[in-house]
Image (cartoon, rainbow, N blue to C red; front, top):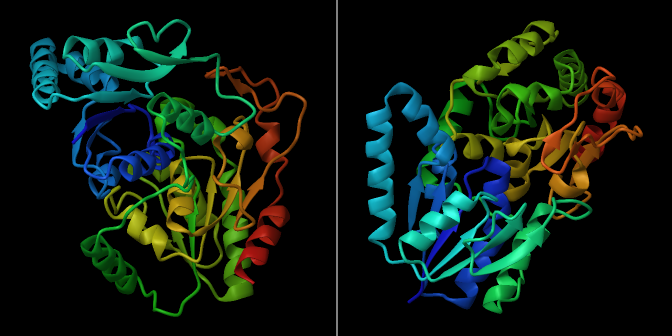
Length: 356
């Protein structure tokens, strides 16, 4: 039995991008024991995955926050994490972090085969590395799957995977029923925030909140749909704009459900309208139709995957777009014109197409 450690400290989308890799590993090594080293925020979506046996949910970014509160607490948490990972005696690690400190730790604890990307020379502690300047011209999933070549494993299934536990499905249905949603209703999820892994820069990916409200109103009239506004508590201000601007009252679930229940709620939607971000990838993984608005980020690299007519991407092709390149966001001197030029009618028309 092989023991394999997956390292990815990034957000929801990046974590879901690794699920085809995990599926391929399980297909090649059915008896393998796979663990995942992630950040704290994404822990629920990893713990629900039956292909993952253990989750170490404490990234370098999480530890940094603990250190800011207490140096000794941070040191203790880092030591406990190191000890927990070391005692598993992993044979292989696949490191998607682009950070040499993760592969250095893997080397120190004795993982003999360390596979990952050599970005800016940061792959020096890897035993097998793929040279990388940035993700461009093809989807991140394609880059991730390339690492399987070092294990002579073919990638047969490129679909993202997200599991919803039965108990979470029941909780979601109870929440929706309490909000007045019945089994045969047309349910549309609206995510006016998203992009949480970008922190304070997430707003540069957000289509104007008033436009979300206008689309939602038109769809409620057209289909008699029930609209759910989704987001975490940090996105309350954006959501309030949508909630107050809509003519018909939507269902407000902002800050009321965690990442453990969110996939089950999305699964009960007929359509999700969202910005570029983790919720879009969750919907794709769950087989829920999406309409997504993209601004500074390339939809070729970070869009719905695999590409499908069930997932519409709305964008404006300006000469400066995409301005997120080489893992850096350029300063915008056009006041988010690429997002603002995406019209309400364009999003509405795609939503109608997908719901008809």
